[in-house]
Image (cartoon, rainbow, N blue to C red; front, side, top):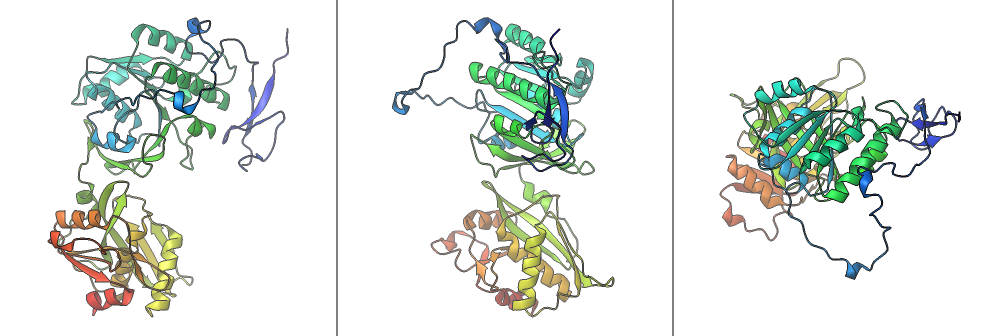
Amino acid sequence: MSKTKTSYFCQNCGAQSPKWLGKCPACGEWNTYVEEIVEKETSGRGSWKQANQKEKRASTPRRLQEINYEEQPRLVTNDQELDRVLGGGIVPGSLILIGGEPGIGKSTLMLQIALMLSQTKVLYVSGEESESQIKMRAERMPHSSANCYILSETNTQNIFQQIELLKPEILVIDSIQTLYSKHVESATGSVSQVRECTAELIKFAKETGTPVFLVGHITKDGAIAGPKVLEHMVDTVLQFEGDRHLTYRILRTSKNRFGSTHELGIYEMRSDGLRTVSNPSEILLTQREELLNGVAIGAMMEGNRSLLIEIQSLVSPATYGTPQRSSTGHDAKRLNMLLAVLEKRGGMRLGQQDVFLNVAGGLRVDDPALDLAVCASLISSYEDTPVPADICFAGEVGLGGEIRAVHRIESRISEAEKLGFNRILVSKYAVKGVDLDKFSIKIVQVTKLEEMYQGLFL
């Protein structure tokens, strides 16, 4: 009997080592190496279709000019948010990985998409739920489809046998960590199994032109569970985010070979499934009956979509010695920079003040155009004077206290005008060459922070 061969794999990045290591030399993580059984490469291993092995030929290099290219139409779903995030629809033969926390709604989203595509044959493979459980969840949704097929299976060889018989146009795998292949003698969910199963699905997707959706678990740090190479193997990586205690979910792109990586889709979780939110600015703005201190509205861009979000801040004297600096949804380092600018250029004594900043709606923002709104919110809380409710902000603040121009200012102005704001503060240099007469909203042009302060708080 031949001796069983084993090797050690890092559970964080997938690096391989012949012996156990305390610290992974590739990713720097500690105590992540686990021993797994490995097997030598055999003929036909990793192939989704063994029958075609004899018919395939080795690829030969060709000149770029000799390659014929025909643009394939994308498969447009009825979900506008998903189409926007994917760059206009589902690309044939693409592999899409969707990650998110447990209970966030990944399976609900995938089942809802499968039911929406009533004219497309969809195979939904679940390794976590039984067929009756999926049926129970589908009964709550308003959509129905006669072309949605359910398969409860975890063996990739059995899944490909059913694919041969059914020939689906879209394949959904829920989840990739539950699949296992007979070609690898490792536990389900291990690095070797996840990598092998994904490689087989990639081979199937590219050879048949069938789009494949993979649902993936995430670690406690928020990264996709399994080897890091998994994210490099797929074409698109989507993150499904949100607080389970709130009703809104955010679908964000972290990698997309066929579109922008800055798009954002917003859903509302209901008892009958996920509802697309066509106008997210309305849900990101708090409906309040009276003016509050420390609240300002900023105009930001997320991909091609303009959003108006609410910035909330609280500035109070420090009573526990060292002042606290806390931000939710905003970069803490950028907050410290803006506080330094306000103290140096504006003369505000913020060194002995506790500062708390919050972005309403659970969003994480990194648009520099929100600097002006953050500063207005901080000044409002510090001066105990509310910002007028009919004004919003769009501008980047420099270290000298100057207001710098931001891109796509016309989209931000149009969104503010659509939502009923009467004034918007922008940089004087951002509106050069822009026809201001076509906007009914008053555009206030400023160049320094002191101009904004004098116009609002004096």
